[in-house]
Image 1 (cartoon, one colour):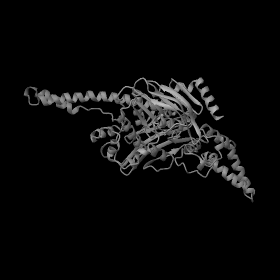
Image 2 (cartoon, rainbow, N blue to C red):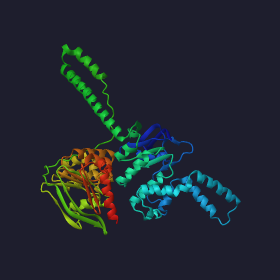
Image 3 (cartoon, helix red, strand yellow):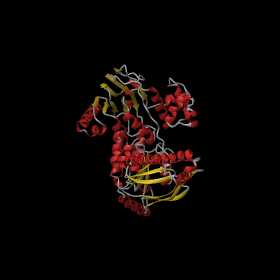
Image 4 (cartoon, one colour):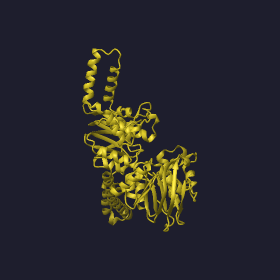
Length: 541
């Protein structure tokens, strides 16, 4: 249990939130949502005692232990993977260290023996003998193979470190668990494992995530940070989103009627104010106008970008044909002898155990890389807009955003270009920012603006939700659902794939699986899973 009492936080004159009083109780998972900068990560740092609030305090239940997902990926570089995970239970780890130090003493005495006995008792109560096997099980569940458990953290890749630090946070069944963006850099299968783990977790969880399917799968409550306040709602993210959109529509309809009434009254007053015969009626309407209280529920401070793709022409019957395509990286085969044909209306999600496979495929069909073998051919009516995984090459410039976007536009009018930047939430002086200083999310919004200028009828999207906030992801998702052209994409966002795509192609080193079905059906189809196991097993051999 975590309780916050009169909690408030501000930096200088900027108030993030104030007068927060609430309890987070065992058996519940609380998804923390809010616009970028609203204070989600700040709240997590306050709850974990890494940051002192301006007002109020945070308390836990007596004797409870809190575990936090580490954000410093280099903190444990000199520790082994298994040791890093076990350090997640600090009390147990300290007992283990003190116990080992005592037994290693050359002058072990009676007093040391008494202390060792006390430690052994505590160690047994915490089921310390199972610590290594429990840590290993967590690592395996998160995709870290047993042969890597004794490696040093500094020798692990960035993605592997994320998984180890997540295992560290989960280790030892903490009473209170704080997870800030736990699904970052996890593949779809590992995210599914984490969803299942947390859905069975019986203690208190608070999580910040941009993954809507993850929030829907694990959260019992939604904590919304907006207008310097926090509101707690029962239900997951989708319930909150749909309810808030319904409330907004009802409010807008109500406001429209009130505004129409106000306008009617104003017109009457102006028209008849000089008419003596109507003076009494005019006076009564003035009083009505003064009393008229237009109830306005504050619109959310969240801003949704206006992502609009308008193909300049309809695609013909031939979209893309791939024959015998193979590719490898540093001698490692990513896929081989790949054959498929994209049909009109296909919205395809590409999957693989190795995310490099999708990136390499997309680079090949966009003319940025040569395959080891095979060919591809686009139809004559096809125009593509490509969103690459790595967009850094586009931003090695000190051009402002208007000039940057002008590179990709036939119309160099500043008003025209600012219109596209405005749709992507760049307004006022922001359009004069240098491209080189943009954040990851800002770069992604610029790349989407670039795509919008293409008027393409086929989208090729490599991890399109990377770096985007929930609002941008939702807007992007809605647009792609309604898009009339073709889509080829890879993503770690379950909801994105499920709601956009009608076809799945999985790349393996030993062939492909190609199914006309949505993602939920794909991952539950027994025949598909059997085929996947055979292909990956034969590739391993």
